[in-house]
Every structure is written in structure tokens, then in C-alpha cells.
Image (cartoon, rainbow, N blue to C red):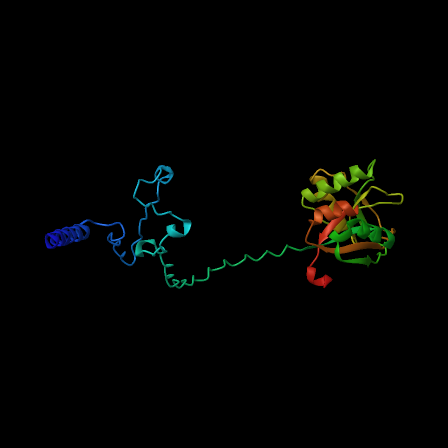
Length: 265
């Protein structure tokens, strides 16, 4: 009887041990697979409801601490890596441009220089005053004296004095336009504003001169010898900024005569 009881007990124990090994246990749960290198792992956090609910009888809920939720180290993926800076291309050599041809600068033409003798003046002071009136337009000025001539046995042709100097100068202008160049306007004395038209040693020459002037329409006259021609002064100048006609007008001269510029050098 006792042996049967022991046999039954042993059989029950063996069955219980077998069932115990067959039932899965919490502590024998399979460990999570080891994550592969380079792949981030995902860990589930316990929900607040699960943590607040009372634990079921016989089930032990492990407390989750911040230390247990340590994130796995991030593994850099090839596609997340920063692209390498591109290698700069070698600089293209700059082609040297040919030097541009500089156009030649046109030379400034030299101004034309005119030379003339302005006069006649009755004294040197008036010639010097005419030089001052011209200022910088008179280049290389020179006052020149022309000696007087004896009047014994000479004849002169002239136009009687006009009412004013302007009228005498107008007559002198008409004489020049008619082709006569031997003349001058007397500026002072008894014959002031008269126009002298030449002096001759013989009467024949004086009469031929008188005839040509009268034929041209001028009221010329002939005077016998015995009169002395006084000395006169002339102003010789060169100018590249004004014409001889303008210089004569500004100097107050009765006439102007062409002059070789080489004589003023």
C-alpha cells in the first residue's frame, strides 16, 4: 500500500516537473536579437496607462528608469555624410590682348604771322603810344624814324585838308581802293587832315601823278618847291593774332605797309 502511494507520488512529481519545463517563463524570454552594425535600434517606451495600472496578480512589471532608455549611438550613414567640397578647376590662362593702336595726335597748325609798318607818326612819342595801344598783339615791335627831305626845287601832289580826320581817312581808303599806295594823312600843322600823295624833284613827274589822280575822281592839287618834308616815325610789328588792317586801326595810324618778317628777327 505504501509502495503504491510512493509510486503515485513519484509519477505526479515527474508529470509536474515535465509541465513546469514546458510552460514558458518571463525570465526565460528570448533575448532581443543583437542589432546589426550601422542600423539604429527602436526601443518602445511604456505608455502612461500601462505604468499607472495595477500590476496583475502574479505578474511582475519591471520599472523603467531613464537609464534603461538610453538611445543607441547614432551610426552615420553614407547618404547622411556631408558632400566633399568640389575640387576647384584650374584657372584658365587669360589671353593677352594686343595693345590698341593709339591714333596719332594731329599737330596744331602754327598760326600765320603777319608783319607790317604802321604810320606815319609825327614824333617818336606817338609811335610808342601806338605800340602800347596794341599790347600783346604787337610782337617784336620797333619804332623806326624816316628822315625828312629838303623841299628846294621839289613839287608835291596832295588833297587839301578835310573837315575832320574821319573824312580824311575815308578819302585815304578810297585812294587805296583805286590802286594808289603812295600817300599819308597829315595829322597836325596847318595842313592837318590833308592827304599827301607824293613829292617829286621835277615838274613832269608831279604833273603825271596829278593827272592820274584827277582822272580817278580825286580833287588833287600840285604845289611848287620850297617846302621841306619833316621826318616821320613808323611802328614795325609782327602779329599772329590780328590782321594788319586791325592793327592799323587800333594804333591810330594813317596807313600800313607790308614788311618782310625777316627784318624783325
